[in-house]
Length: 277
Ligand SMILES: NC(=O)c1ccc[n+]([C@@H]2O[C@H](COP(=O)([O-])OP(=O)(O)OC[C@H]3O[C@@H](n4cnc5c(N)ncnc54)[C@H](O)[C@@H]3O)[C@@H](O)[C@H]2O)c1
Image 1: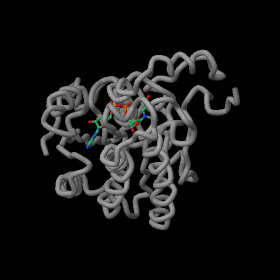
Image 2 (image 1 turned 90 degrees about the vertical axis):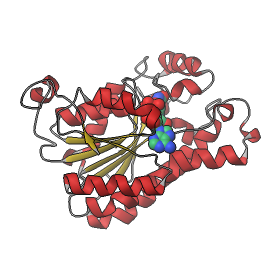
Image 3 (image 1 turned 180 degrees about the vertical axis):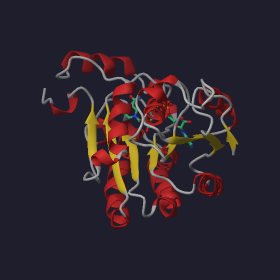
């Protein structure tokens, strides 16, 4: 594991960090899913750093490494960056062993990871291949179980908080979302089962159901621009949400301010999910 290169200032903090400190001071946040500046995980990372957390980021593979390391240069110098494909048990084991020795424990764990084959994100759900189904489930849902299990000993006794990212397609039919909707349904159920398992040790597990946001992954869903337009037309707030709005709710769910909340799916979607027609 290598440390991120450079902070903005000599004391290792950037300006956002100086604005508001405290809530996550002395805490470690492990965040999976930063690919680029548009990633929801990046907005969560910035909120965590601002609130004082030391951050650990993964990158999925060598292709993603340079981009993630470049982004990490904007963060305090104690930021850690390490490889971890969530479907590779060995890498997951190595990743958390390194986090354990570098940070001692984990207070916040973010799962902002999903993948489905492009050909499964369009057309009819009935045409989903077994291979495509299993891949979407493995990367997008089972990986939360993988990460929670690997992190469990590092979270024990710290009132830690685990957060996953989900979407309305888990519970309603959203055109083209198909196999990913079914994976998100499994992810949301996993949030509840994991909350029950980890709760006795003080660890909470929740999910944010985010409204559609233009990111790398989202652009793989065919007709995504139509989805954005439908929200802007019909959501109570008559607009889409931003990564930053998701980041702020994440900061709340990852902090002790939400200490009584576990096993929940919280909607950050400009209110769209309440609408009947
Ligand atoms: N963008 C949206 O409209 C939207 C809405 C609701 C929920 N979400 C969810 O938010 C989360 C983050 O997505 P995003 O929109 O920020 O897109 P993104 O493309 O920026 O992030 C997806 C991340 O998943 C990672 N990933 C994929 N397969 C992986 C693997 N095998 N191992 C490790 N990492 C892997 C990618 O490297 C990437 O960093 C996803 O769970 C997504 O389903 C997104």
